[in-house]
Length: 252
Image: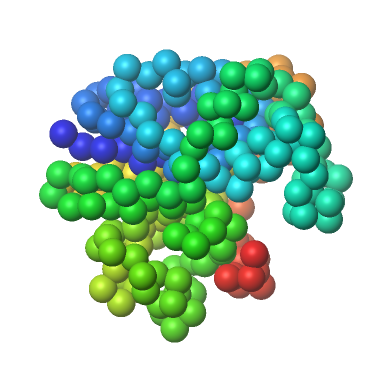
């Protein structure tokens, strides 16, 4: 029975629903949520859907989840203190939507998780890299820069996310696969995720973007129209993001 890895949902409930429908057809026996369920336009609905799943579901924390958790606790992180207002607003709004039980839920999520997967052995799940939840790297990042980050990893396969771009590469003897993003994909519209066991299958799920955009527009999420236009109805190209990331890789 396979395992699904879903990363960077970012409160996009229609995208999450479409992927979960596909997981039911695939009869997965467990789900790994790889961080950044938050922030996003439908955070309560996404958390409720995931926590009520009948399929065993594991969570790890992403930088977005961590920032929302800090605001729920009234903490201003170093990132928050220097972030532009349009970056802080979605964090603040999402934190205001959540309930005390969500604070307890998110606080319990680990930074990394190692699980045995049929046909793959032990697999390490992290949000960005094994060392933190903010490192940026892409399929173009040199192995010289990546090797120290993965040198101490015991697992032969690492699953990551954070950059919202799927890829599959080798760092020495370690295979590193990016699951892409369910809710805010780059390169192509709709939802990206992974199906694991016995192989590694980079998956893509289409869904009704127009009706989903209308549902998201009904929320009071900050800059909701920008979210709809930039991450649902259309998305930045892989080339645009690779260029943008080249200025930030392994610096954040």
